[in-house]
Amino acid sequence: MVHINYIIDYISYLLVYIYCYLGRYMFEAIFGSTSKERVLIYLFAREKGYAREIAGFFNASITPIKKQLESLEQQNVLYCEEQGRTLLYGFNPRYPLIKELRALLDKSLSFYPPEEQSRLLLNRRRPRRKGKPL
Image (cartoon, rainbow, N blue to C red; front, top):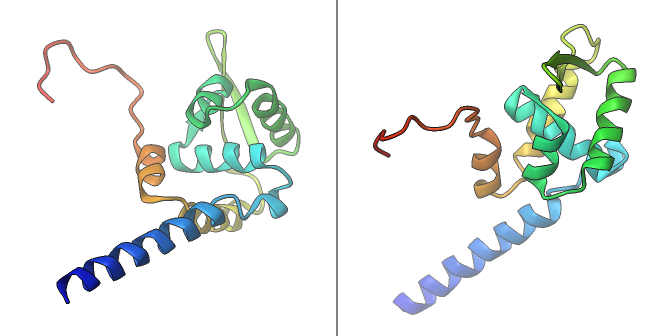
């Protein structure tokens, strides 16, 4: 009887994981592309980011990420600021539908697997101090 409970728990875990994995890019139809969803989710989770950082996180090519960032900036969804030679992007607080977009992105993020959610929400920008204990 104990083995059956473990099997049922394992199968339910697998079903939830498969549902989350298949539903991960379910907002692609609304956003128009997977790259746009990735850009928006990343910036929603981390507030700011640049093209190479976003592409590296999702193991994607930088070209479609740059195109989506430029497109969203032209539509005033995002703003861009220069930090040295790097273009840093973030959500435009003056965008009229920012609250609704954030609610939609929050819902979309809830469909990501828990491991990827925690990776997205971990926002470490500086290296660990030398000799600091883990």
